[in-house]
Image 1 (cartoon, rainbow, N blue to C red):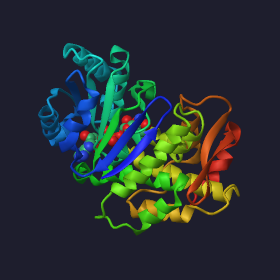
Image 2: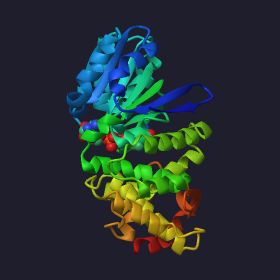
Image 3: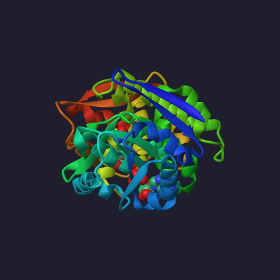
Length: 353
Ligand SMILES: NC(=O)c1ccc[n+]([C@@H]2O[C@H](COP(=O)([O-])OP(=O)(O)OC[C@H]3O[C@@H](n4cnc5c(N)ncnc54)[C@H](O)[C@@H]3O)[C@@H](O)[C@H]2O)c1
């Protein structure tokens, strides 16, 4: 088993990574639920696959379990499901001495986390990520929330988990597409902060265990969160490929997955930064090779004008500059604010192969 400690000024927590951890969920979670109740939240697919064994472990540890499930997919990450979950927690009479356990991917973690952050003004949260994306990204760092009609993730709260248990056996049932989505985020960590991770990803065989890869990513995310818990500085490095990627996702009506869109976004940025003379090294060839190796796309199917329009209409954007994450050399990115009226010219060379 691998382990990472995320050390925050308010409180530290452990992230455990290894095969079979769901069977130990009871003993791991019991200390965070002295009131004896756990609300186990998951989407219907994950509940079918892993709900029973997780609930059995919790019950074996003497905990009373109530299960809340919702239809799988991003379209459930909304205020309606969130309110249903709050009402459920209230009906189950959970108190501040009880705990919410989020079993699933990023949708479940964000939704259950937001409910835990706000129910009774905050009760304990444990994250049990079952997608690669949730393991390396969304389960760590404390960002929780739901989508509004006006856009993604527009309502939410910071809520750090008490513990994260990543059972790597669960990755075996992911579809290849969902696994690839997570790999886009893994490659992102290598590109922004960790050249050795890039080497590890080049050398590893598909059947090799994922523990070490996940541990490295969680350690990197933990480091950024420790430095910038509220996401006003260095943590923005995690947006590499995302500013362009969000515009691609939105333009496609969300038919292009998040991971594929981020992959295209990273490739566009790497090419643009090199051809603009901004990067010290040309990071694009190695990045593109890795993305293809893990079945991810590197070309954006939309025109530059469509892309820029999407980026500028981002509801979270403020001011007349847009902060891009720019590769400087392999394993190192920097924040690079670009004036809005120069964005199109900056990205243009990145659109070509
Ligand atoms: N909070 C954060 O910091 C943060 C960071 C990145 C992404 N996110 C959010 O995460 C969400 C995306 O996460 P995701 O890709 O995990 O999506 P998801 O939770 O919808 O999971 C993707 C699909 O995989 C299925 N699934 C989950 N685990 C499985 C398993 N082990 N075996 C088989 N199927 C399984 C789910 O049922 C779902 O259909 C987005 O809403 C995004 O905004 C949050």
